Image (cartoon, one colour):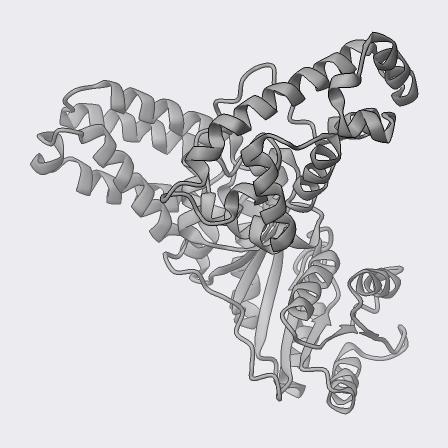
Length: 450
């Protein structure tokens, strides 16, 4: 999961701070030295780390903090607040013109950053919000770049404008704008050529597009896994083109997180989206406060709720809630909940949003999302009667189910045991979740067992 290494180290620092009844100035400085090392190891820009630690220290060594009843907690609070400031404090959303006008977004970046895939995801999300996007294929250099864009556009049901590889990118962009005007498209997303490195000629092509067509937002796509290289790329692109924002991809695969913590501080430009996986919903609006919470191991319940509300049918959720409260659900419901969990990004993604869970998972929990396929196979090997009445599954039936799913009978036993434990747990939790403090309707939306 993203930030695992950094989160683990910061959690250890915080644990030590909380364990002390009183703090001395030396305790604070020692803790912040460890924070500094953890941030540098996470590939955060050196100057950014220096300024960050200084800002926290100036707030944390005051007498009000050292003499307070919970000094450790106060220092952690300051670390959280300064981390939010580092990433931009306010959530910056994509600026779009009114729907009767055409918003032009020019996407740029190095090769391998995931630009073309990100463009399609962004177009898909805009389409869901009622916009009519058009993708312009202006990468005429990379083999199969146009075909890749068309394939990704098809996945999202978004049209792609192409003139092949025999025209200049600036002419394709101008023609695409006219096409959008004639066909009622109100967002034009220009896919430009990627670069293996900063190339002056190709940078000039981007500048030419901006000179010949009104580009409302120039957005840079960078790969989080390249760490400080991503920050340097962002700085150079901003100097050459004056970018408006950044999309940080592959953040789910980056256990360090240095780019997320450095880009805004170094370039002054906001991170607009974070790519957290392969699915359309995995392109998430970047919330500095929620990201800081994830990094510090405090979870991200708001994003979890938003994923649930976006992906799960309200009527089905209410129906499931009734079943949960009475503990009357069966393996068909279990299967449906697994499908919902997949839509929301998978088990590992969801666990990463629960406070403390990333670092405190029980050792016997397997969060490999591929393992869920085995569970599906076991349930599909059951008869309809067995799925609706699990109590009838005797040893001979278990053997038949195991053979059908291609697994050992112990895995069938384990699933049935987990299912029964889940029913008991849901019965206990139903009162808590549906009380006055519970979010209305959320109980039925949460994947089984969460």
